[in-house]
Image (cartoon, rainbow, N blue to C red; front, side, top):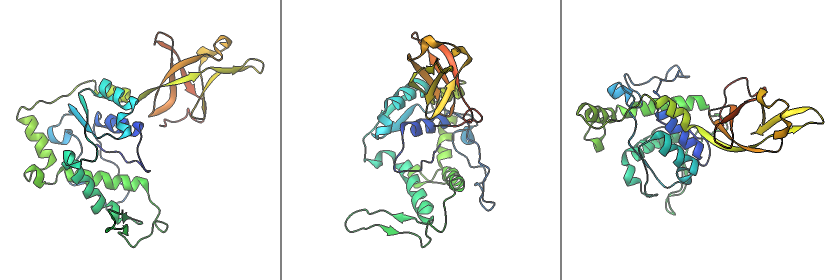
Length: 278
């Protein structure tokens, strides 16, 4: 499973979003470009290999700050289950198959996009352009780029690799499972995926009784209210813990001092109209 992050780095939310996707069945995208198509019978995850959604038992990650973040480690160990192994940084040999995929994505696709370049490696290898097309003349379409990456990764899973004895990644998974290897699956995967995207935030109840402005909560420039807070002037200024799902910010669950649900807040329009993420 993969996720595209535009920017110089990725956050703890980006990390959890990838693992959330890994607990849900992969589905092919509706490709934007008519000339683009998936390799026949290709796919991502274990379902194309064995017809079942299996879960990882060991999660190997390097020492990036986003991997060490408290939200990342607590949610992964609680809801993703298994073992979280934060291995040594700057040692790509420990994840050779993934590094080979990254190199394939870079050299075979990304560097050929308008504005593509190869960064400086050392003093003797300066930064150089890898395409004659300029990005200013060819704006990037993120949907099409996502389609391209999905098609490439699916095809890679069905490509024989020398490091795997000329077997495909799908063949390796299929041989392991059909040969009686330990496989972990759970009927709770969809619920765990939802919980992986949960986070706690401190919130404060605000209001203005003189102006009859009912109690509300501000979060990420949106205002939240609930019928359960109507005329609760006694709560103004009090702080609570709120639980939200960063994949759907329409709601915030407010917890009481015992950790139980006190009230559910709903964002006011326009933020309440459609599902939106962080």
